[in-house]
Length: 463
Image (tube, rainbow, N blue to C red; front, side, top):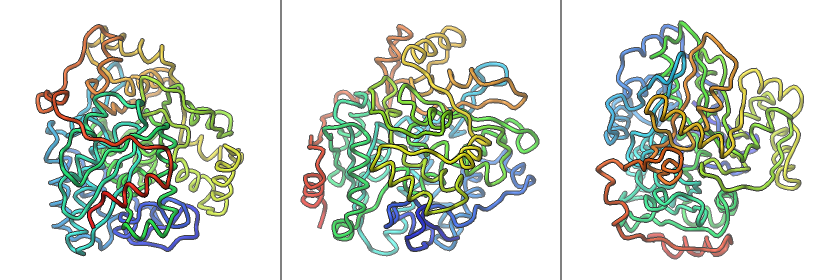
């Protein structure tokens, strides 16, 4: 299995090389040269399997020769050992033909744990084998950072630096990043928004002298291994509801397009997905792009669903690459326009290709609160604001015989203020995190300046 860049000008890499590289040297994102197909009988055979066994079956064709079968089984087992639900990603029925996929039973209570725990174990196995050391840099709008720090804290061959927008994550999200005491993890509060953090990470990857000097690696959803790990729960949930014998639909609250792109990969592998619905909050650039064909940044407006407060959706580049028939030159043209002019227009042909698979919707702040309150009153189910955005948009989709699965991306206790305002009840953290607010914090506030951030990383990383 080989991996190519969405911009077509970077070296073709193996799975392990693409994982450790993160962002391609031409600025693009790695994708598999071909997408392995699963036959209907192989999809049906996933029924009744443990999550770990299903993960092996689904991910193995993408791994190539990077890991042996026994080694990869062990990696998967370690990755999900810390989840507190036996099903790992259980389904809960919300209504007639509508189901909630709970993705918050991992160590940091968010869907990012599915990918980050996996990538942490993959990195550890690869680095122990090679004896190399890497410096991981990531940007977060809230959940990626805590999941990355949890996955890599205390590991011998890794230094981790996470950039998050100062004052724009929930207190629980911040404390999950700032309370780990291990010396190899560092939380940086950047004076800016998430797009600024993400831009500085990309700038570091494009500063080849710095990149090579510190052994830079990335764990944002620009890293293909993260997307691959998220493909698994699309299959397991769909099979639970009758796939491949009937189609399913998914609604995904998304900002950076990584989670829903994993659903697109599942579709390309042969999972019968009738529609992938993009659910956005008031920062609705993805919804506007699918409706109008114009991808135009308008600035980030802070919301009660902060993990979706994004205007530059990195993984949208991956689906554009597919929509344009894997034409790297077309992607370069679009990304250059985004950087120079703040946006671009999707060609009619590419837009039609996107609309065949994707639909979209938008949920306001008022709609988010109302959905949290209404579902709590109707069913007793408590949603985090991001999951509420997904449920609201899912309920607005045209009726279909195909069941709808809405992804619940975070535990409501990660956003207690928003949930309490909507329901009148403050959700509690699980017992293992009950003392989170008593733990001392450790973080550095830093300017939105590439030189300052690079100097900090160079100074603090282990030599």
